[in-house]
Structure formats: C-alpha cells, structure tokens
Image (cartoon, rainbow, N blue to C red; front, side, top):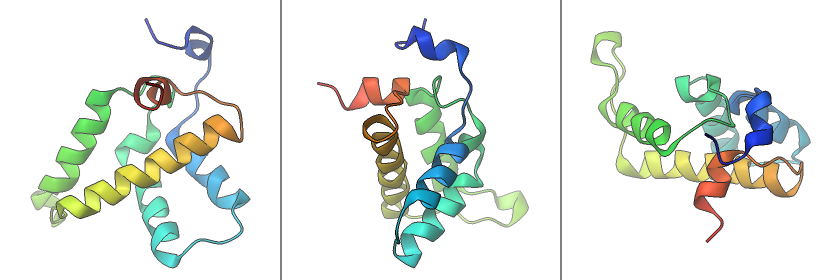
Length: 112
C-alpha cells in the first residue's frame, strides 16, 4: 500500500522530473546542471517516482559509494552522495510545490 493511492495508477520516473525541472529553470551553475544530468543517467532515475522508497535511496547511496570496479567506476566521497541526494530533494520539492505532484517520498520525508 502506498501513501498516495491515487498515484498508484501513475508511472513517472525521476529522469522525467529532472528533465522537466532543467527545462523550466532559468539557469543553474554548471555543477548543478551536470549533477542533475548525471543523476538522470543512473538506475534510480528509471524507477517510478511514486513508488520510490527509503530502501531505493539507501541502495542508490551505497552503490555510489562503492562504485563499480568491474566497469572501472570508482566510488564517490560522502559529500558527493549528500549533494546528489539534496539535488534529488530539490527536484521532488519543486514537483510538489510548483507542479502540484506529490510523490510518496515527499510525504515520507518533508511532512513532519
């Protein structure tokens, strides 16, 4: 059971939200645009935004930290994962307040 039953019928991905966010923005630093573009290329971005869980985010962070040695991808520093998570949060909060879309992750994390 999801926290937003109406959203169960919808399927949107984080990559869709990121692209829309980047299209609507006036301008960002190169670092923020690059980070969001990179996040959009990762596995977590292909998942349904309405069914993302804390476990999905946890696995994403662990994966970033470990890297993929067989593919020659080194792990990243803790500050990089923190920045990535904050960029994801910015996109999700923007979705909630500007597009009036409420992914269940926002319900879990920003309403206390």
